Image 1 (tube, helix red, strand yellow):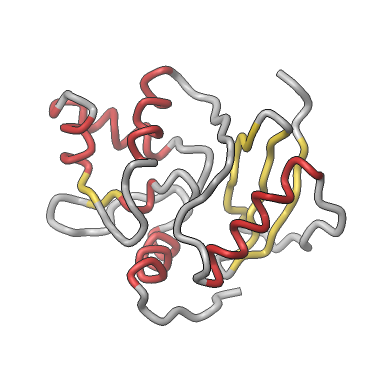
Image 2 (image 1 turned 90 degrees about the vertical axis):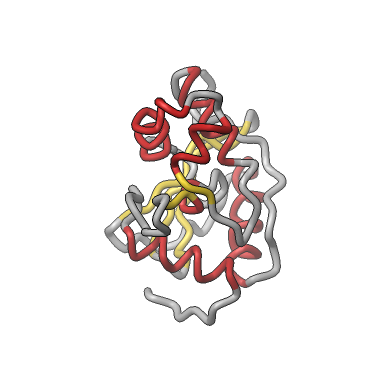
Length: 160
């Protein structure tokens, strides 16, 4: 694997650590510590940061980036299915399992969602409990709630 570039972007939900290279984006992870925005952003990550800024400003609903998440074949299939959940919509873990062809795989699907290395762009925040509850989100339930409200058009406040 080629060397990965890294940059930090302070979003309304805190610092995002973005890694990738000319082959695509490998990860976007929430960092709980406040890290200063990268002054010099590697060329391979500039488009990603621009699109994230547009997303948070409300000007972007879909991303146009090459993604290179590292995971098992099953995890990648779950993440690919997540990419089909449109902006402003949600799907239950059960529905996600059905889309993948195995209703009994609900726990494995939930586990793969939790291991999604590309937050926001691979929208695991759009997967909710069958009863509508906001269950599980590696970045924290409060961030999941914020993202879903942002996508539904509910007025948001900057938290950082």
